Length: 189
Image (cartoon, rainbow, N blue to C red; front, top):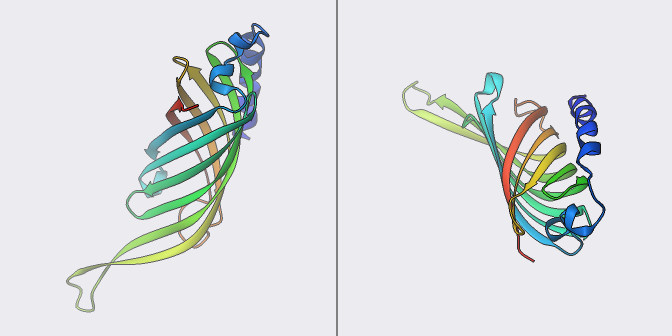
């Protein structure tokens, strides 16, 4: 629902941002076919009852066509030092607006990993704290909408809003959440 609202707000911006059809005005140097990029995105915030939340997403992307990439990505999430998720997966982006400096994209992906919960407890005599660990296999799917701003022929900054759905019913953290990400991207080839 949130993505539909954001998409409805960005559509008029996308129509205004499409200025030219020549390749130099459409960021083919950063978003063109056979381009290889690396990026690092991070997110942080406060997750309601679970406290501070942090996410780190390194990504290697290859452009199959102008404006369409596939990526191998890792994910590490920390939920108030009570839960940690680590996973590896694939995602794809489609840049539906590509102007000289500004690009807007849709993203979808899936990662497989493990969520580890850490629950403080006490020993039998109630004295020494014991941390019990439980690991649950977790698959996350995500969809997002983002903005990419070109700084030079190799560097760009990006931001996105992403909704994540995870199959982790027994961990106690929300299975559905939305958060904002900020990152930097560098063209290798």
